[in-house]
Structures are given as structure tokens and as C-alpha cells.
Image 1 (cartoon, rainbow, N blue to C red):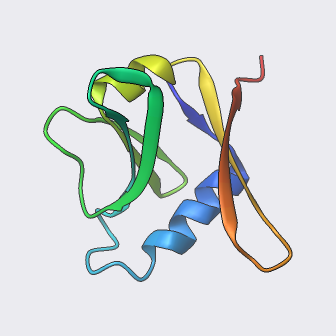
Image 2 (tube, rainbow, N blue to C red):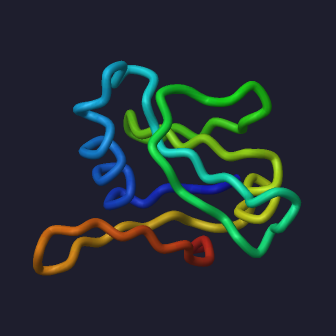
Image 3 (tube, rainbow, N blue to C red):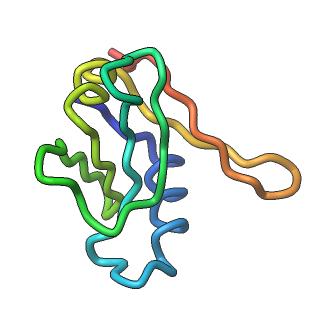
Length: 95
């Protein structure tokens, strides 16, 4: 299952804090059709019916079935540049 680093959890909480329904909001990672090579990340008010939900420290990530399979053994990390723009990175899980 995808894991979240502390940095990613904080970034997701920051992004969803101003959402209309922050209690259910999260980020959604989804595939482009059946193409597992192309994943997109977007803010989501709630999970889709088939989504896998990953929650860490109050941060929620919704994964469509293809993304859940692709990211099963990965970790999501986040960082910010000098201007404060957040970027997410997928890395191998630490053992």
C-alpha cells in the first residue's frame, strides 16, 4: 500500500484545509484510462466509489484501481521550492 511521508501528509493537509469540505477532501491519483504510465494528481472533495483510500496523520489520498496497483510498494513525498510551490515525488518505500 502507498505510504505517505510526514512532508507529504503536511502538504496534503495544507492543500485541503481551504476546501469546501475539508473533513473529506484529499488528493486523488488516477490513471489516464488503462495507461499505468501516466498518472495525474488532483484535489478531490471525496473518493470515487472504486478508490482505495490512504490516510496518514489526517491527510487523505484517493487512488483509482490502476494507480493503487502501480503505487502499491511506493511512498509519496513532498517538497517546496523557493517560491513555496509544492511538488510531490513518488519514491521506493523505505524498508
